[in-house]
Length: 530
Image (tube, rainbow, N blue to C red):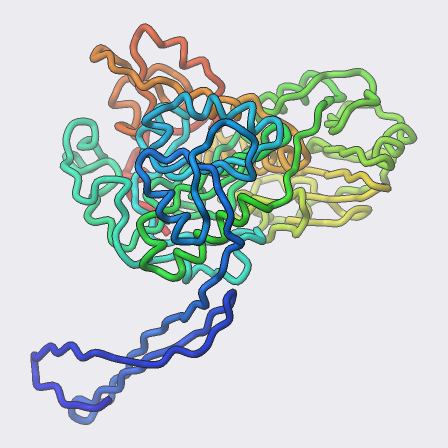
């Protein structure tokens, strides 16, 4: 195409091309190049694009709870036949947009279904409702860039496919009117989380901060420090619960990348191998290790001996374990997790060594089943420590630059963890707060992947009822009672009536040193984004 453009003139010309033939599960890359000559100077610009083949689903019926009808319409467009869920066993139950907000009892009815082996996919719910009722922290931004993690569900899908989807998202208000608690940022009358203007190009309107003290496993990540996720899964009992806050209902019909992602998410929810929780987690060791595990939030039983029926054994630094008994446990398929230690004497011939000066965590995630859901966000440190920590040296497969080790014995596996949230002394060195949060989440993820359960996770099946009492108080992310000005997350934080203050004692998903004061304009919800 050729032409002339006079000074200051804007002209829009249609471009028509024949896309290459692409297989059903493939995509092809294309590029449009503009060359313009102005006087003696030549200017070039390029526009890249992808052509997607239309993936075919296997079809079939999918049980649905969908008062808004958006999820049903999307599933039908993907080739499935949505039918109302009647409470019976079915390959998959999909809970549509805002179905839980409209009827929170739905998730309570689904709990025994999931626990006994059922699969449930929950679509995006109102962000404020999720924060108040479920206790999750939700990003106040519309995220237009999301990044894949080490999950097979997004094979062949890259970060370019997870950004700037065609059309606008509709879960939240596109042009909100700011008033009340929103207008109390560090800059005076500006919104605490910055201005929100338009939902055009959104990928998710309700990314959830990855729970720290929990078994939720993220499959995608986004936003500040990649600490948020719009797609995460929870192995519960014998079944699985998946929460997807991607704005698929708004974009799948008009954006081929969004359509492919939608098809992959549903297929994954239907067919991904389940990973049942172990029936018994046993801790061997003293009070210090027990207190450490309590801060991680994991459920366990204390024992003086290695119980024969233990599915997962947690070994403290001061535990005395017979090597023959331990090896026999592993040989028959048992799992062992070693708490962080300064030396090893465990009968498995694993050694430690001091990390090099300037060691600041890791950016690489080992390709182990036990490391699923981890990312560089969880493993890197904000700075190095004054005293180098002990890391894995030899005797096991080494991951995360020595922070993790893995050894198989027979059908069993032992994980050696040198990730220790307590080592950062974040109460004094406050710049380590984020690092302590991330390390807590990393340890919890390892334990969850080994089959451990977390008391906090049962709360998703028992939502709080948002308060309607005008004489209400704000409950901070730590579960502490706080005034409005102490809580930068309002209005998307827990608000409970004075008569319901006992709800603040519920187990919290997040590390208890979550900051509520951000001096010098250091509010991450205001400034920092990817």
